[in-house]
Image 1 (cartoon, one colour):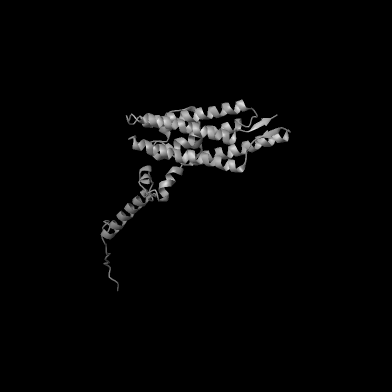
Image 2: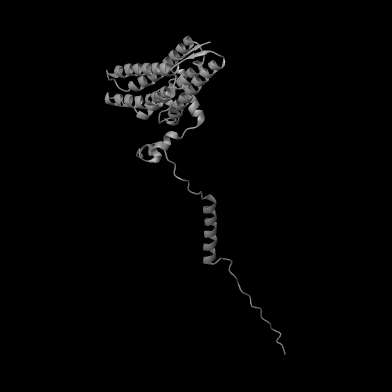
Length: 261
């Protein structure tokens, strides 16, 4: 017979979580917080200072001087035509920095423009039945092309070393940039020299000499002011004389033809 007295077993369960459960929950929350706030590491950014410290035999040293967009090149071309003092500030390492893209492609464009406009002017004159009096030849062209590159690369190196020798702190790259952008005006000079009038060609060459010469003289003079060397005038006179030689060379190598229309 079943007993009338029955017993129910009551188990008092503590709501306190076990230690491993608390640790697991806490660690999960912490991990979720860390993962949500985690940002993937970014690749190291090379600054101008780190690039400039590289050796000239390393690619990174030269890469910094070609890191420029088209708008900046056009702006510097514009500044070279308006004698704006902002040009020297624009190429400073504290602003946009110097570039070698413009100083290479602008003289190359000048060479191409001179060649094309000279050929076109002679071809147009012949097409209209005029007598062309010229000693133009590809040998003369090659010699004149050499003058352009020697002027924009060899002359600024000589000027830069001369300034350093006289105690003026300057960057050879800055001098190269100044000379490279100074040739911008000669693109327009070559176009004007297509006109079959000797007086127009002379005026165009004189304008090219004046604009490019004043641009170089102004910026080099601003660099020379960093020192009080009494021989800075020697650099200024040399700049003017070299620009005269360059302008005359272009005139008689490319723009000395005579068209009888």
